[in-house]
Length: 306
Image (tube, one colour):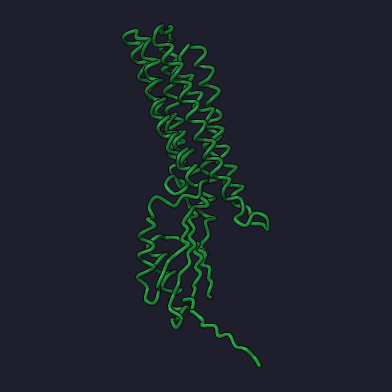
């Protein structure tokens, strides 16, 4: 029986450094302006500003968690934690997703309550604070976009938080304009509702992706039956079984499989072909393959000694 393990040796240190820097600057900017927007929301009596400040509070926690996840994720593996602390970033993304969904649902509820009796809102003050908030969010979104928003679920969840804030600022500006020009105080809760629904949608997807990874689901872009077909197409491979594809993190997919081959086959060659085919098709570098021969039926003869 042959057993082999292939692991990607390329370093992610550059991407981790970029993500860490982006998250640090974003955290400082968001946390600082959150207090300004919260006080402004109280003074102007604007739910749109308060909801945006609430999203910024959620963002501050999200960015802090994401930053901690990057730092913890770089810790080396130990005897007890053989994958290190890489899963910490998925836990951070899960908490961020829960926060997005919960906060959006609460603001949506508050906005619906205000629809029946919209309070008086100070449109001018609301406009000034919303514009400053929009500029801050644009800067932070740009900083985070320099990180791995596509391949790193943790950074993407933080980025979605900030995009939600950006939308909140746009909604607050539009609502402030309507209040200033037409006296439509109802625009404030309506803007809050629209932004909350959008953020709720994003939060749900982050929550779902986090749970999928924690449940050891396969990456969505890899199809199990295609992997089986690729392995079965290798000469002398007779059967493919015990195939498992999962993710430690979104950046760290893994695969294990057993291959049954002909007894007289070149197992080293099959192993090399299988690793190359899997890496080319799936992009997975962390692969474990066990090669087994066909079990031979041995005829047992019972003899009686005299």
